[in-house]
Image: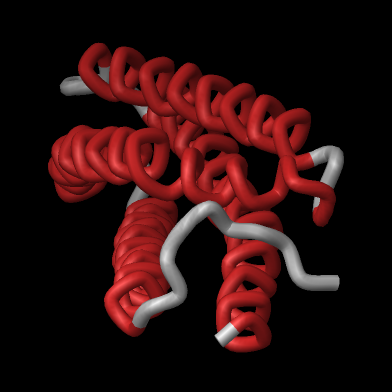
Length: 175
């Protein structure tokens, strides 16, 4: 089935879609790498709970998560402005009737992840001189936040890439 994409079938459009896909892959890869780094730092911190080093590491992780959330926010803004309109316009033409529902679920996942990260950041701020029990609570909040964020990125990929790849196939079939 060939679907009208509402765009000229030229190399510039194909190239633009391919660039969007590459940027999406690159940004997801960078975000996942940052999450992996935070989780490695957290594992290292667990081994030295109660020490001054663990408190220092917690504050370093807190700063990294603040930076991560800024990067994620910029990424989400780009997706909402450029990726979703392009993919939703195509998916709504018959390929994937649940696409809009799935984007809503992704948005809710993102909000949930933000809540966990905010909770971690607030708790970590209060743990400057805290004991190991408070540090364990902060680690637990961070672990859940990282898990939700990782699942969120994976869900986006599982939803976006097949639609974008089908778009490219349809463009080439019409050419």
